[in-house]
Amino acid sequence: MFQDSNGLSEEERKLQEERKKKIRKRLIAAAVVEVCILMMMSYAWYYYLSHRKVYSGERDVMSPYYLYLVEPNGTDALNLTVGNLHPGETKQIIVGVCNKEPGGESTSYEIGKDSKFNYEFELAYTQNLPVNYIVYELTETQEDAAGNITVEWSDGNQTIQKQFTKTALTPKGDSESISKKNNEEMYGEKVSTTVNQGKYDIYDKAANGNAFDLTTTVATDGTVGFDLDYYMIEINWQDGINFSDYLKETDLVYVIVKAMQLEPEEAATAETTP
Image 1 (cartoon, rainbow, N blue to C red):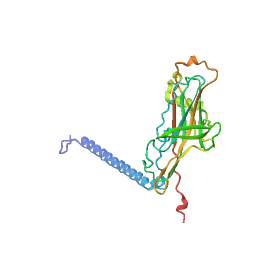
Image 2: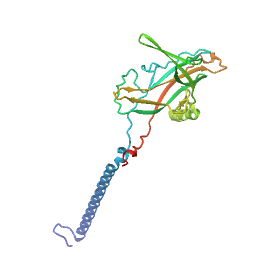
Image 3: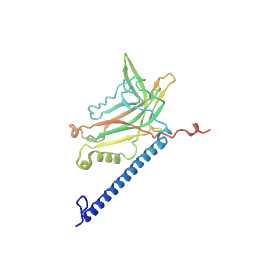
Image 4: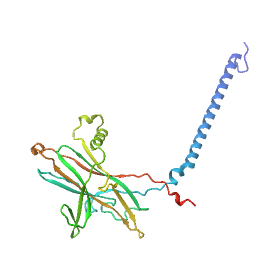
C-alpha cells in the first residue's frame, strides 16, 4: 500500500485535503459575514447621524413643566380630608391646581422660555356609599351675588377672602366605560370578584369649552409668573337613603391632575425662508 512521508495512505491524504478545503471555505464565509455585519453597523450609524436633525434639530423643544395640587392659598400642598358626612349634610372641598411648587420660590426652577400645557382633572372614588360627587369650576369675581362661593384663608396676621362663581362640569366620554377599562387594567382576571372598585370621572374642558391649561411666563427681569386654577368638589347623600345601612362603610376619594404632553411643533418655516 502506498504511504506518503507522514505515513498516510493515498486515500487518507485525499480525505485530509478535503477537510482542509472545507475549513478554508468556512473561514472565508465567516469573514464575509463579519464584513457584512460591520458594513451594516456602519450604515446604520451613518443613517442615524445623517437623519438625526430630522427628528430633533428641526423641532422646538418644550421646556419642563410642573403640576401641583394646592390649598386655596396657592402655597401649601393640598390636604384632602372629607371626614364624616352626616345625613342631610353637604361637603364642599376647594382644590387648587398650580404650576408652582407649594412653598417654593418663583425662581426655584430654571425656565428657558414661556410654556403652556393642557391638563386633565380626575376624581377617582369607590362606591361603598350612595353619595353624589360633583366637580365645579370656580371663577374669581368681584361681585357679591347670591350663589357665589366665598373662600378664605389665613395669610400671616390677616385673613384673605375671595369670591367665586361656580359652574358644574361634565366628565368627558363615558365614565362607566372608562372606569371599567381602568379597573380591568388594575385587577386583571380578578376584576369580576373584586369589591371596592373605583369610579373615574375625568374632566378636560372648562365651562367655556376650552381645554384646561396652565401658563408659565417669564418677564424681562427674570420674574416668573404662574397660574392657579380653582375647583370645588361637592359631596352629598343621594335621595331616599336609609343611613343606618351605611354606618360602617367608607369611601376612598382621590384627586388627580395629569399634564397632557403636547407633541412639539415643527419649527416655523418663515424664519428660514429668504
